[in-house]
Image (cartoon, rainbow, N blue to C red):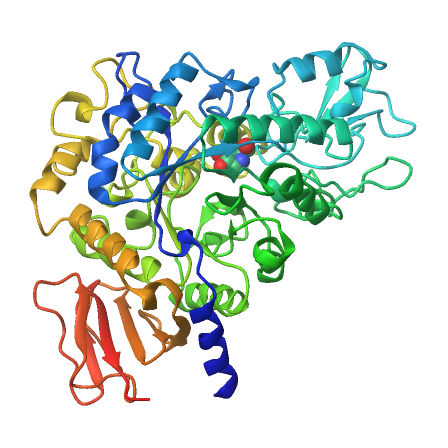
Length: 589
Ligand code: NOJ
């Protein structure tokens, strides 16, 4: 008891960073709003919607990559870090967007993709041009495996598979060597071992901060240090049914030996002296809670928070991402509860359900049919009431659903298309099985255009959209949502306002309740004498739960997603289908 009181006391004295009170909104510009009629969203489209973002109440925008890019991976393959792709606009247009957001008190975070560049980046063009080019060592070039004929199957320097299917090494006939690409062959990995590479990246980052951006979302930032041996070789990875015939590159590439050293150096070189108003969030697939603490403990000077992947991997079967299996709510509670506990005293959580790589949460963990509004708002309540900074992905605040595509030609995403090709080549799955996997897990579920209104193409474009608009746009769209006070949109507004106002939501301690209940997610948040009790029903039927000691008759409703909230009775409460409830209990202690 004493130590808890001390912790609370310490927290009261230390001024909490602004992002403990903030909600971040992710814009995937390609699918946000198109203003020039080419069917692809652009910066003018984002500019046009800044008042919408202000109405929602978000504090910062994370803008997915709009840099110059051949668009092999929709901009996560950058050929010029200091220019905007003409598809999206110009540098002047970005300046205008920054100014318009700042005028409304909204910050802008750029996506920083520095584990790899495009193969069309001039750095790579030089590196590839000859084995003795000064930029050769900016990327990972390696000869064929000893004793093997270069360019033949199995001669790759390691057995690693790429995250987008196929081998992680591309043979280059010009010099007879291979380069590493953990993602597509058009995304060669930069060699962070080389200090000149690091210096070039830091200079670029300072240039963006000088231009007025307020921080970065750092793409796969825990992949930047590879486990390279003294002789320059890299280790093979274990081969499993899942990765075969390739080896898993994880051990040699994720959370590598120098990752913390590199991030601390970046902090000193880029953020020192101007860091307080900024936000640095790392994307860290494969990071454990212990890693998350190392990355986000402020005393270490690395990042402010990281995105965990553990909770979005719980509905994957043994066959991996596209082998969908139903979520067991107990696993979700155990996972998120572990992250809450692990970052209780230091570090910070980035909270998310959706982003441009994940299926839509209402279709994934909710019910996007009869209970769409209730389940979307219940899921939002659970997420936003955790301790951490919530991220909202465009359209999530409208309760947008998965694409429900039924044919291969609807898909655009490189990861999905590679998966189809590889599965067909292996012949282990029928086309129907492959389509079912894509329908559940494809990244394109999140990438259909934002549904603005009921006009053709949901008001996204006057041209032909680059990916089909979800036909449910006539019912689900921003105009309809804004007009309905009981909508998902207005519920998100209330949740965002609650985080701005309520210190318990911002900083309260988190305690998970009912860890073994299969359908009800329950926890408390506590700060000083105030406790919030949060309940969410992850099912389409009534659930009665006993919470003696946590409920009292004087509890005040903070927010709920039914017009008449469930009433606690004798230490128990019955929550209705997909109901969410937040109650405030004030203790005399
Ligand atoms: C993570 C990004 O979120 C994803 O969209 C991208 O394909 C990979 N990193 C590679 O940059």
